[in-house]
Amino acid sequence: MPDPNAAQRPSELPQAKVRTSRLRYWVWLVPIGVAGLVGYYLYDYFAAHGPTITIVFDEAKGLTANQSDLRYRGAKLGSVKSMELSKDRRHMFVKVELDKSAESIAVEGSEFWIVRPEVSTSGIRGLKTIVSGEYLQVKPGHGKRTDHFTGLEEPPILTDDQQGVQLTLVTDKISSLGRGSPIYYHDIQVGQVLHYELAQDGQNMHVQIFIHKKYAHLLGTNSKFWKAGGLNVRMSLAGIQMSAETIQSLIQGGVAFSTPGGVKEPVKPGAVFRLHESSLPEWTEKPLPV
Amino acid sequence: METLVACNTCGLVQRMEPLPPGAVALCARCNFAISSRKPYSRMRTGAFALAALLLYFPANYFPIVTTYYWGAHQATTIFDGIRGLFQQGSYFVGGLVFTTSILTPALKILGLLFLVATLNSGRWKKFRTYVYKIIQIVDPWNMLEVTLLAILVSVAELGKVATVHPGAGVFSFAGVVVCTLLATITFDPRLVWDTPEEKSHA
Image (tube, rainbow over all chains, first blue to last red; front, side, top):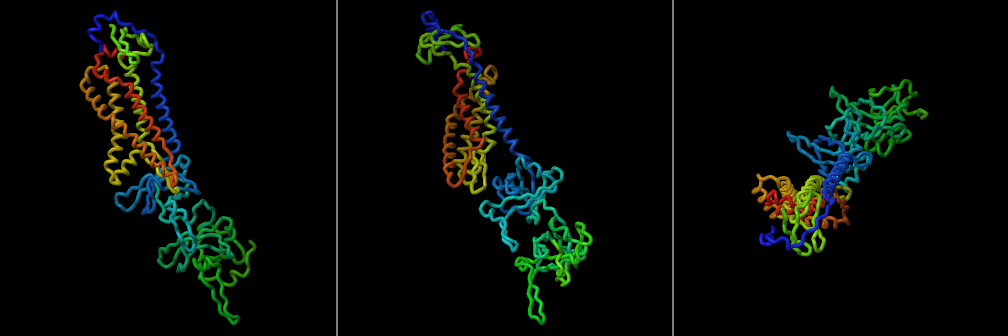
């Protein structure tokens, strides 16, 4: 504040010089630059982040929010953002934020499951998860765009878009067959058991099997299927003859098939066959030229 | 009307004419710029406070650090950190971090913006004084952001077991700190009670 006494004799004081200044508005460069930076952050964020999808699981064991990844073909496609309990407390809603590049898997028909370490007769799977924790895996579908999915409680047998033929086998007892049991053709694995269920009449079991495309030409309407698991023991005058398809089928069970007399008429997908308890000698005598 | 101004550099008291827009006064003896109020205080404070406000949102929304630990990654925002401290039972430290990194910057930025926006209005005169008082009380607590940086450093020290990447949040946060600091430096508190006529010197 000016001193009132000094103000009475201002002429004794020196006069300040005045100069024009052109740099008044430089300061506005700061908020403009900052707005640019924030814009870049937002662009970067939305360019890298795809939609958030919700997957419903009965059990979300092993998943951790902000930590568990969604993987496909070994690469990370997104991560678990949060997990919420449904109102009826029966399900978990797992929210997954997809990467921008993974937008195409948010379509109907995509299947999600949790990969956990698994030791079974068909092999050891998901060992990596012991160190990294459980993660989500996806099998992409081809339907319409959607954000809501129902997760699979168990990993599907076919984790890729594998081409092939699906058939139904009918048997009255399942024996040692199970999910993933191999299908053999002359001791070569050509497919797998997808799942099985009790038929509606309560008498028979329906076993869904999958044969890879490159072996599908071996199937004919006259093909015979039989259980290949376990030991085959034959006693005759020549002695005791024991045979088994493979070590794996000995433990895990399996299905073998042959097409006696060659393929007369190719099968249609979804065809139904009888699953025999064991093979007849004439089915296996003349192997087909592959 | 001429005013008397003391040069901040050499201390010479001198007369100064009312300045035309875009002009700056220089000391008659040492030639440094002089002014009765901090130059362009309103504009500069407003610009820096606005910049700080813009940065405040990414600073709190984006992760401060992303840690990779044995293949699992975790992005941590300031708020996650505070929640973590509360969950661990460190209510005091959690409250401190909340106060210094979320509450006080917001109060300060909004307070400065309010002061700058209402300087010419005669209506808010008393309220402006309260706001300025709050800013004064809050200001020293902002300095504790240094402790937050210390926490970050200790997190980064885990480097041998985990990989730590700074996120967009930490740069924004540093920007908030710098911009609020500049907004405070350029703010001339005398503007709070100056009459409109005196403001013309600012």
